[in-house]
Amino acid sequence: MSFCKIALFILCSVYFMGVPGYAQDAEALPSAISFSAADRVLVLAPHPDDETIATGGVLQQALKAGAATRVCLFTNGENNEFAFIVYERRLVLKPKEFLRLGEVRRQESVDAMRVLGVRPEDIISLGYPDYGTMEIFLKYWGETKPFRSMLSRVNKVPYQEAVSPGAAYVGENILKDLEQVIAAFKPTKIFVSHPADVNRDHRALYLFMQVALWDLATQMGIAPPEVFPYIIHVAGWPLLRGYHPELQLSIPPGFDKKGIRWIEQPLDTSEIGKKFDAILEYPSQIKYAPRYLVTFARRNEIFGNFPAIVLPRQLASDTELSWTDLAIHASVKNRVKSAETEHFTQLAYARQGNYLVIRVVLKRVMDKDLGMSVSLMGYSRQTPYGQMPKISLIVGLNGFHVKDKKRTIASAEVIFLDKGKEMIFKVPLSLLGDPQYVFSCAKTAVYDLTLDETAWRVLELP
Image 1 (cartoon, rainbow, N blue to C red):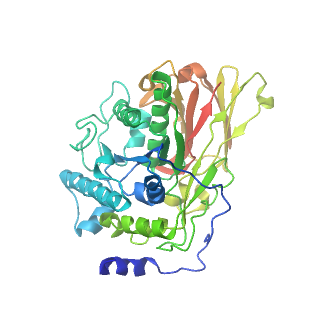
Image 2 (tube, one colour):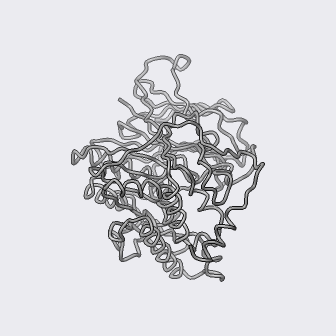
Image 3 (cartoon, rainbow, N blue to C red):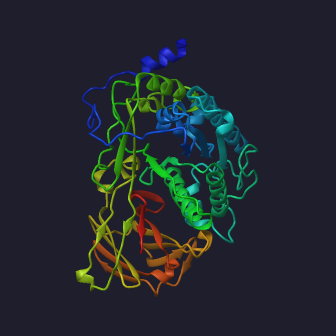
């Protein structure tokens, strides 16, 4: 190990005993994921470095078993302005400089994967906009101007090594590229970012992947692989920060009783050490937060997926409906450190005849500054996803209105009942495109600042 790595090791190993929420060992979890030479393992990473900190161990184990492996980078991570200022030791202002730093981050990923044994030719880049993919998933489909990245100011894939250089920043292109990658490789196991992660690109990648898998199963008969979501960004997790190879990753606080099926993957000493060495290949990120990335080089990796929630058709009255409560807070404490910003006490769903019914219960009545919205994205096997409605139910200062992507639409079909802290929405399934599945998420916000946001969940409508 070089002198620099030894120095970083010492810096990262400062031991903060007594930190609230610290847990030395993970809860007893089912283990472990087994690999064989017949496996084809695909890691989907929202940004360069996620593939190493989340799956550096399982990649080594898959390669040892003789499994084929691929790593697919969703973005090049060019929008991390503060990390670049620290890395460059100067202000980074020009759009082209952000694209150059995106190239730097991609090369760091190549170098880290080489440490783990993944060949450069097995690393795929899509090159879509860092911190823009969720906006694309929600709003940029069909006949629309492409999304424009805030810092790089481009509206199409700018990287020549990407799958589709020059592809416009719209949902159809992201979906096409992901489907191309999955169809060509035919993975048996996919590791992907979690729909409850704080980071919006992490959440978006999971959603795009799920649509791609449904499409490929319907259109090409490709059997769905096993899917193992990994969680990275959760407020105050993991603890202790720094390199502690003697510790385990625990289930993040609040995520242990929410229907997530967690799996623990143990790592041996050699695998932990090699993962640590791979993490050090991301200097652009480590200089900004030297103790964060190495926190994930521990005795295990954890993966957990939400099951789809089946909503059977009910003919009961409103007072007799059986509700499924899916509220799980995903991002609030990372943005505003106050319990006052946790607004949801219930986010529940039911299917009443040809309506999807949503009940939202808040801790307090909304004031003039606070807004609340519910996103509903339907999937149908009969309709291309880009043509399906992307509905937002919005309650705020201007009352109640409904949007399909960026366009406000007539809301007479939607029944809205405001009972103060409790709100009921009855949405005709026809307005959602008569879907078999619905993605749903709710959030509260003050203007454009999100305060409380629930995890994305999949509702199945048999």
